[in-house]
Image (tube, rainbow over all chains, first blue to last red; front, side, top):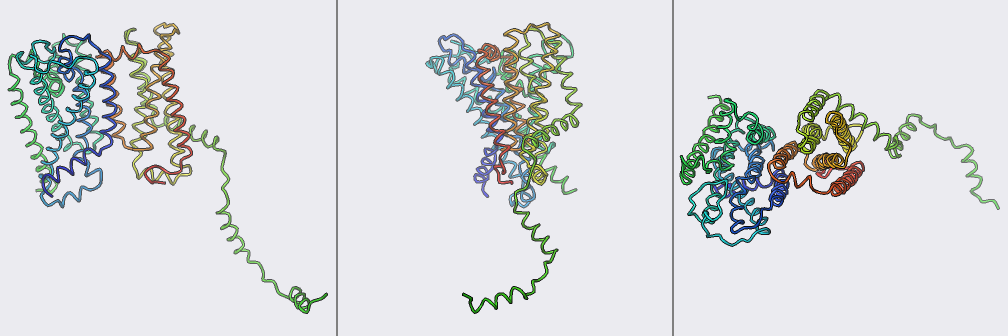
Length: 278
Length: 253
């Protein structure tokens, strides 16, 4: 089976998961409710400012939920369907299949992020005037992202979209790595989703009480630069912007992605040797 | 007028040897015929009562430690929470028993297990019906105990505000009961339930971190009364349908 055909089959396998649609339905309702429950007074470029802020504000929660649900069954699917033995006979080898699975995940991440941006555009377009796509960001700066103020809103949104796709893909590849260790998809969802939620609970609630303690600086650092911070655009806020530019963040993410991609392939190869006993 | 055959018939009836009845054959025939006769069963209400009682006690027997820990956690949460956050704690914690019991319910519902349950004395849907009712009853029981404790410890008056938060807390219980029922019938996968729990955690975060929480508490209580009423009616309708169903949607008898 050729690469594109296999990509199509893997994509079909992914989008036929019922759990994704359950999560998508609930997340859509919650995202829509949250956006509409917070109508800020209309001001010039409010539409673009809100759009640039919505993902670092709450949007990344929903992206992460869908990533966890979608990726959790990506590897255990064959085993849970009882067709693992069949995969062993695959002509081009399972590494090729894993490469295709990882590419499918990139497309999935891009689609999920795109869906939530589309939802936000629809929700904000009903509240604010949509003019000013090519106005400079300095006209209405988002409190969540610190980029070159001479960028236009079009540039900023394009950049944000790419940023979130890459961050979501890093998260997805890490969950994929987790599924080499944990065999049941339900436990993968529990561990990946639970630890992400725990990170958010720590940041928003626990830090209020233990923020002054010396010990809190380690979990704070992990939270800030771990998956939560990465998906929450912490790499673009004013604290980080002094050390690393927006473009360098893309470079950093690209390096992490390549490393994780190769790590997953190596893990698969290693597991095959373990299974063969050599 | 006598026919010429009358004497022959008379003689045949008088002297013909009737074959003796084979008692064994007779018993077999009766047994076979009985298989086609309607089976007498106890009244449905009696079966329902028995099954619910069994499901109720089995939840207690299998999960008493979890229930005790959960109740302790709720009482502690209610004791230490600030008065301003009462509503969010009640709303976010009220469906926890359903989450726990739902997890156990769906975890045990693999297709193999369902096929095994189909051979039981009671039908699969009757057992599922009783389990759902028992889970909801346990949840409402724990919710009531926690609310009574709250009334005592916080010296809250039974006011319209209290009524509002009680109704608000009932909404997730009824919603997730319905979700559990629908997922048990349709998907029977524990991952679906895990997804529901995960999204609930993010809903709670959203209620605390965004104006969504304030928005929800400011909605008129009548809306929640109507919503809960409709959900209860839908739940009862689905339960009634489940009790009468003889075959699951995916073709398993």
